[in-house]
Length: 144
Ligand code: 5GP
Image (cartoon, rainbow, N blue to C red; front, side, top):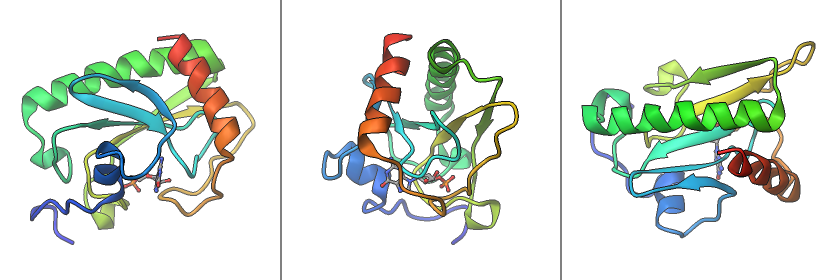
């Protein structure tokens, strides 16, 4: 799949945005939605997506990028307060060869804890327990 092309409206995140699939929500406003990653690479792995459709950052307009990363910073700060990680990785993949598996622009907020490894990227890990994700999301939301 090339870096440029048609936006596929059936991708998982588009379906979450339309309410056709559930998510464990952290934050939502007119422009962005944030929710817990279902196959977390670490405890508290959170996703932030723009509501406007685009496949990747190269195809996202600058205004949406500004809003997206403003929200990423705000949510990352809440993750720090809520979960007290020792570090936070913020990643963003563009195109399948780069590791992108869901083709709606998104940013990963991945807390890191000293001594703990990182799970597999891209849905290759273990599916999280929804109740546990809900508790984590509640803590992050409370810290926003
Ligand atoms: P990418 O590989 O495109 O950078 O990131 C896609 C992310 O979406 C992965 O971290 C993967 O675990 C996550 N993911 C895949 N399917 C679902 C899902 O149905 N719900 C949620 N919340 N996350 C998903």
